[in-house]
Image (cartoon, rainbow, N blue to C red; front, side):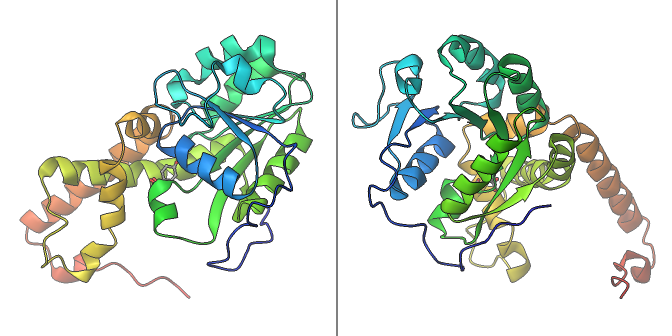
Length: 277
Ligand SMILES: O=C(O)C(=O)C[C@]1(C(=O)O)C=C[C@@H](O)C=C1
């Protein structure tokens, strides 16, 4: 695991100073994360060109096509919903040059990394990344930001460059292989969204003034699910090969607990053992 030189909490990335005028980013996808990432890149002084066939892109950022966005860009950021990545990359492949670095920013890593390896091969430098932040955590000013970087076997230098980019944006960088990442996300991200969506669908009112402190921590989970158009929830669950098993294990544990409570087991048996020293 590689830990980057993190900024101090609350410390901002360097302000735009025109230092990076030659390092242009092509951002393909302007959804919730694409918009947030464009803002971070611009704040750091990077020119950004955006193409999104669906979302309204501000005129000063908009490129007329994916090819126009990518032309001459040092970085190509794949910020479309994960299930669209393959088709987008197939269409884009003829425009890409060996001097460019392609990175994805999806919440799962096995499928996107395998797709980039397959379609970009040894010719086009590429790297998988998962920024562990989004518009809500940025708005809460959570620092330090964190990003996972999954190096491609053929392109270790692309991973080094991506690590440098995320550090420049104020992130701690964690290096992981795609399977370890997806396993960890199945037990954290996927379960958090699963529980939160269950609570939202149940009609739980997280705005009630009597919600106790123990519930306050869940509010971020509910806000994340409410802010999602559905793509993120589906990708986190369906594109992660370990998420189904994690959900099944959680449901089994909840069912077991439910039965214990109904069976009136001794309260002591419900206690969670203290962690061993
Ligand atoms: O900050 C937000 O807006 C988020 O929802 C961030 C969030 C999450 O915590 O679920 C969303 C998706 C990413 O894959 C990682 C982080």
